[in-house]
Figure (cartoon, rainbow, N blue to C red):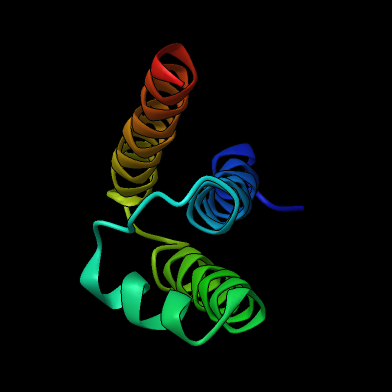
Length: 101
């Protein structure tokens, strides 16, 4: 059974993809990440598919590589911290967008 941090990373990745898709395509916000912006130019299906598949592969790869490492807990905690900041950034942006609309 997967670790709760690994499962939460998958959830955060999907949330990030869904929120990004919504704000870009529905609210007209520009994507700040140039790599993601290139995927967004190809359309929402391509963006969501690539973002989610790459996220699943990367998280699963790290989980397998770090399975017996003493640093596993630290690495996944740091990744969760980064994703938490990304999701908070989305939240602040959405609140700001709707406050000034």
